Amino acid sequence: MIETDAVIIGAGPVGLFQAFQLGLQDIRCHMVDALPHVGGQCQELYADKPIYDIPAISVCTGAELVANLEKQVQAFQPTMHLGQLVTDCKLQADGRIALTTSNGTQFTSKTVFIAAGVGAFQPRPLLVEGATVLEGKCLHYGLSIEQDIAGKDILVIGHDANAISAALSLAHTKPAPHSVTLMHRRDVFDAPDALVQSMRGAVSTGQLHLLIGQLTALHIYENVLQSVTVATPQGEPLEQATHHIVALLGISPKLGPIAQWELAMQRKQLEVNTENYSTSVRGIFAVGDINTYPGKKKLIVCGFHEATLAAFGAAEIIYPDRNTPLQYTTTSTALHRLLGVSDKNKPV
Image: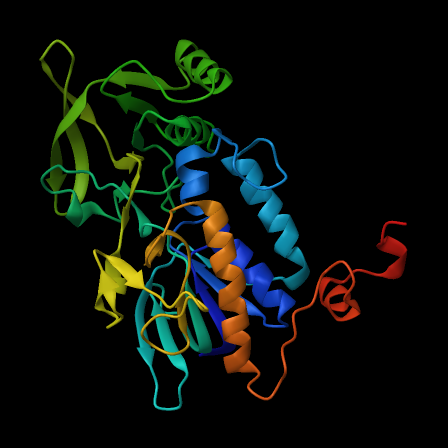
């Protein structure tokens, strides 16, 4: 059981800025995200696309914004719990909140901040009969395979940079698999040109196979994958020996367990008090796209504002006897100490 002052659910831009604002209130936190990395929707959906409405930054990509937010929050070193989903969130008799994740991690926290965006991002499943019984054994939704793949036939399904990178990585694994095949329904890939060229180069040398078509059937014996059937563009079925499938079909957001936490909701969004963005349960706050209130706008900059006020709301719970004055990072020596800023590092 991890006892803490604050848990942030969601490690996207607003979640990262929430951790920073909590740090300014001298509140350390743990962060949980269903993805194996920080950045949330910003990293997953527009990592390479330009953003023009971040204050004082004329333009940056989603990935650059996330990197800058990670650098900013380093002073407060939030503890990350990635690749896991918060499944339970219950108010306890003593006013603290108990949380459990899909990995079995348990927290007791004085405050919780739900910064889950439009929901937890989860891999799109392979919709072929028999797929569910293979998950974690022969069917994988991550970039790697934990099982021994030496001498095995591997099929990677997908069209983006993740799929190509996974296929190339597997093709160079030692001890080597028998074969690695990258499959997509069209010979068109959504990835940087250099990466696509590397893939085609590996295909030309025989290190990697490229298969254009669509998976239609899995051939399983005693819950072990033996081969697959693929419909080719010519409409002809092709059976191919396959022992492992890495399905990188993109991700989709789902509200998930949050809907069962007995919090006031409106159209799958959490209702909040705009004084401090608290939900209907004391100690639980909601910031970013997951919340709703009159005049709500789903903009990153609005989420930053919400996180700031939510941090002040949390300070009243965590430090009930402390007067929390408004301080400025330009002049406050107390904030400078929290940020680890020494006099010699300050600009003249």
